[in-house]
Length: 355
Image (cartoon, rainbow, N blue to C red):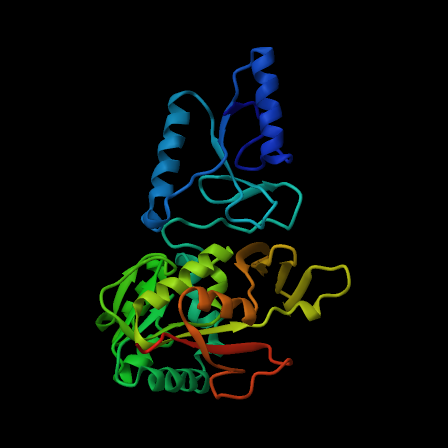
């Protein structure tokens, strides 16, 4: 849709979002003006074709077409990366410029090739998640999973840089992984033993690999990277489809910290320092949330945000039931401490019927 915008598209876009673009385009048409930019509502990729770079190809083609017709830039309004009810405007270089009413926008939008875990995140991932790489954390996790594997194969959904896959493989468990981010997987490959672990690039909610597994696992809150209930349900079904009879699906995820929300507020800070601030934003109506990071480097502020969908243990149990699994055990953590109403996270194991 052509519309007139006199500002520099690299600096700003209409503050009224899609609604303002429609109104501006209608006025342009009525008054005989030719728009200076074009806008598309969204790009939709069929579920089985996601993660193949098609969005980038389509955006590039659209932008070339816009340039060929004399338009100075292209804007894409898409709600798919924001919470329900919000709409963000972004150029196809992936930087959000404006939003409509609702929660704040999610910083850089998702890179189609690597999801929200592109090269910049991957380069600093191990260091930024150093607590999760502590030997005590890793050893407890690996021991728990190796016991469930019981000599069989393991499939990691969201294998990332190999934090758990590599030591699990060293324990003699054959491991395969699925991950959307080539940047993260390249870090895995660069580590000792990384080239011996099979990895399939794709969306772990839908991507299938050959064979069956004794255990499928999804750790470190990664289930929340699936930002719709439908995607989370699909993930459970995909995990179940990969399990051999009697096999187990393991999820490690936090309990939503809604009790920490002050009355009438929707923000929970979790890191404050002179140069770095981090906070979660919750929408309790939709279960949409985002983790947001503001950092000052060499006197310049940088902002990054990643969207999630928080999920309750009882909801996960229902997803498992829909996938033909039943709850086998639930713990506060990998050391099998009791799960209680005061637990801030849980490790849950669902099992596929043996026969």
